[in-house]
Image (cartoon, rainbow, N blue to C red; front, side, top):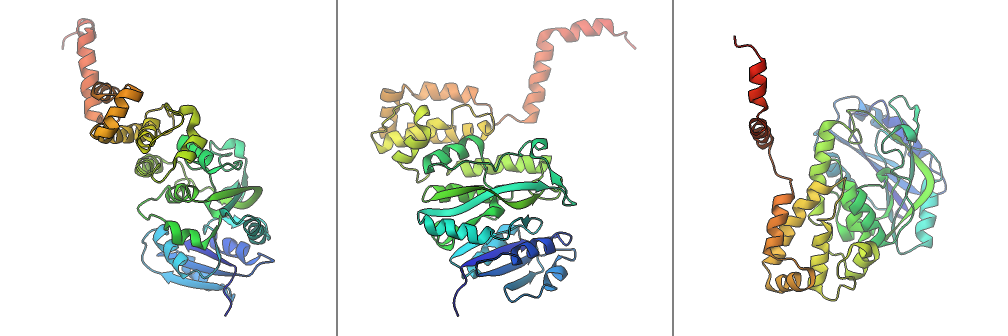
Length: 362
């Protein structure tokens, strides 16, 4: 039996009100042969019943009853996929055009060096009503231009994730080469994957809108609640630890030439130093996680005789520089420390004495 050109995969979870629309938007695709693999992640609503009611020979459904995380289910679907390409859709979104897959396959055929193709998104609310991008703080995040590998690394490093995952068409071989999704990450598993991808392959961003991207405040991973925001920063830290792993001299110069101290990066030791110094540059979005990575990496470099000598001779960096950074990079203070500091400043100011004279004794 001939393998399909595309394997479409979808992990479902508690989206009984939306999942049929998502499935219908996939089954409406024209001009391309595909299989549609769906797996439920232990939904507690009617999602499994809705999916099971769909009768189409292209659909294969795996109704799991235990919730393990979207990435665990998605990785299993990737392993089951038999297509040359893989497309992914979320169970609360829906594709907006019937030629999405055929258009993207054509792009990939014409550009064999491209590992994955993406597009732009519209935003909708729970009821399917369009949300003006101007009303969302991240409304234009997916409206990206095409860049070189080094320039994409710079974009990711400076601003974080900016690619719409459910618009993706990726070569199945890229997962085989680079690995799949990390299920320990909830907010940014796709961002982690794009960083690994761009180090090895080009990507292509179409200016076409391929998807209605649903915003469910407090319900989905895209919502901007306190828990998701905290988790996002912590995941950025974990991802940053390996951000520059495998990035070569040419890619670093391509993306970060304006920030390099020794511009031509003559040795591998210089390359390691330049990567570490990038973490110390002010970044209003990701500064705290980056600064901590910088401290950890610089401690290792200063402990290496080869790197230590270059740091001193070519960068003017020594142990005293490191000590100064340790006193300025403020990432580990606890809430208790802040309370102690506030009380100390209060006592030093003498205001407690002035105010005590104004308050009658009881």
